[in-house]
Image (cartoon, rainbow, N blue to C red; front, side, top):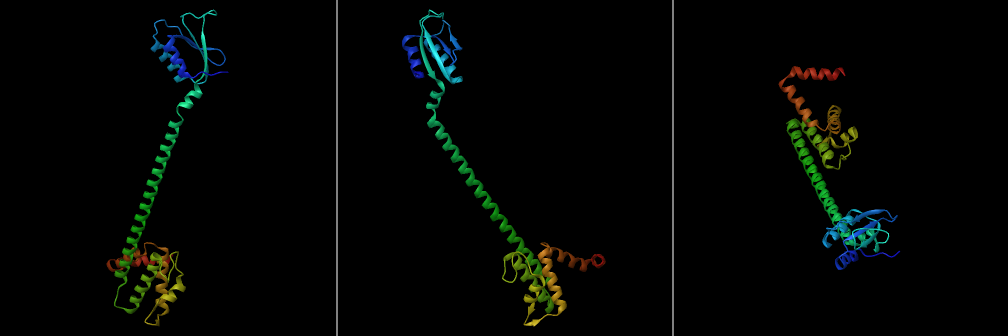
Length: 241
């Protein structure tokens, strides 16, 4: 089956003033019959163009010089493949569209990655600031002229530094409670009493398990200073557990 280029049909209408035509599908059924005798050459071309714009497939186009169409009417018949013509006209356009889309996706991925990194950096900065504040509060809350309390403060700071900063004595993932306490809680080469060891080991464990330990121990201390009755009730509650 020979196929005719669609552009040739428009040229044929121009040259031979063929304004009457019938379009058949691949099964021979009539799809469009242009028999309007008031049509100009431009009207006929527009009519054919509109049909091909909204219909795809293989069609047979028969032109004639008269309005009527009978078995004896002389016709000029051409077969066209409108689907293949449409594909040939837009391959570069599709390629560029795909390229543009890939560029947009790549750009969005870069923006998302940058935003994610910024959020992570801000989060780390905020955590570091919080840890610094907690250490400062611990220094203020535990600072005392008494030697034992001074040692307690140093042990707490050492543990807190290890938890938040990855110190050598204490790993980031946690604290080995009593073992760690025995190693780090020695001041001026004198081993502290068992009671002090117990206190410091407890502080270390609280810091491991309570992220708001500095805040809570401060609140408890203030309660003992400002409202001894409530403080004693809280202690009694702990003893009753």
